[in-house]
Length: 321
Ligand SMILES: [Zn+2]
Image (cartoon, rainbow, N blue to C red; front, side, top):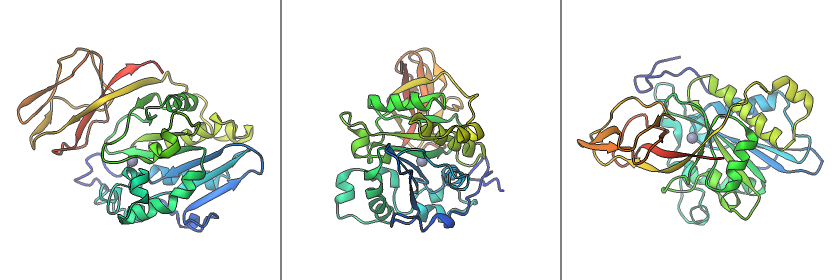
């Protein structure tokens, strides 16, 4: 394990071998569907939407190897951006996030149906019919600096309801995603308030801490259990019932977009700090002050390094779930 100069928090988790799951049984590489033979929802758990977010691959390996199967409906386990995952290099641990472009900005129908080509888009198009069959989705991610785990619930009420049903991690972020393109969790029916299909994105903390794997596994079990799809023996053996946090729901009001090459935070933010007073200085951008716009402003997902044109941090308000 190395402390890469470009990963100051170190690389304490490595990819696991996922080649045993390549063949699958769906006709799509790295996608497996288990059919319980009983009526019920089709639940899907997806990993490595981002190739260097290793915890999801470990969590799926656990679900496969421990024979975690649902007692009703279907369970699909999928590894998304395998090409990116396979290129992982611990000396450059952030490079393998994607191949040509961010896989998690491609989930607009227009983009998927359009003529554009890239390695990531090819994989998204392969995976699309699988996603189309799922009633509910859990998409496993992690983040680039150490910070608390969180659920990203989207903006539909059904997303917040699913977050409540899953019950942990404690922080639930209600956000609309990215202007650059739709996330898998916001694809089609998942983002349609009139349809029951719900999706959840879990950020399991820092990419390269082993604890991220435990969070990914527990969130997967909680997701399946929310749909009452696991038997008691499985739950007794694997589910950590002690973690029953009071969830905090945070509605993102907008990003702080970096305008210059000289953005500096006023202090270190680890994520989910609540800044009590409006007008508090949180950083400077080209010498101009950046201040909180309202009282009790929550700092959501501060960036690893400020890059002009990108998001420094998202600002949010506490709301009732
Ligand atoms: Zn991600």
